[in-house]
Image (cartoon, rainbow, N blue to C red; front, side, top):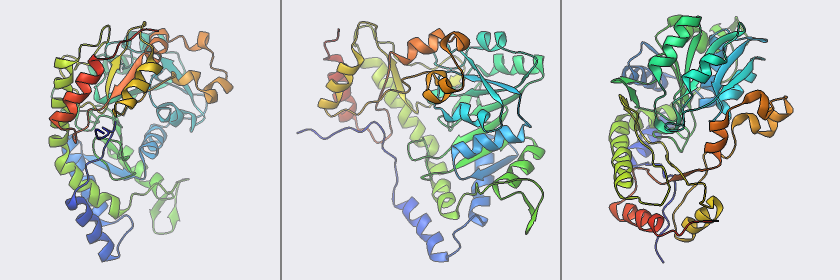
Length: 368
């Protein structure tokens, strides 16, 4: 029987194991000098002055939105199509997420719909570089400038992605996740990136119980600290990130050249961007039975998943908060959610794996 090809496989080698072991042997495990080194190196990589390491990508989003001064009664516009953490970070502040529709060709927030949903309560835009594809940074930055809105970038799936030669996370306040499935990992962990020293200061206060000095607490804070064990792994992963992304990009190009599934729309990199393919997401033709296609792939040993089956406002949580389909009005997001499927693209794939994926996908006889 042929080996199974997982949808996601973190690349962890002896370098990461030894880096973690060195910290463990030192007995200095909590946030310390290694974490500070990781912050410096990550800031340099992204091209910003400041990076603040945190315990998760969700913590990074929460801290970024808090640092923007978002409060109860404010509105923040975000995408209807993402992992729920993107919108929940707005709810954490008592503010209201306003959902904008997406562009079907990139799955990213539609600047025109975003513009249409701005009100006098809108304070910020939280846009997501989804699946490794940068959103339309120029258009959204122009809208933010015209309406005096803050920009928060959810970069959880886009480590190393670029827009016009510049790394994501350097245009507004960037939020990264280092969860096990990401393009680089520390197991858990996150990072806020910024060129604004005041945002960085606030983020550092919030992550450590609001401590300005030892046992002097000036604001309500949290325990959002990263450990030196995680940071040590992160430093090694960061050194490998460009090579791992290059492998993802090469794998995506191979799939784009060879997949011929009838009616399927394959992912592409928008002009002026470097797409790092956190996920390789295809859109199936309406006539294709997605459940049957998933079962077929899994029966042939190919991991796959739906990212994401519902727009965020259709999640039970948001339904309970009064978000109706009519109120949210994101028809493209609803259509996309019914037709997307993620195929393996991770850097551990061999040429044999890729050939098997192509042969299997192309051999599917679709239909309802």
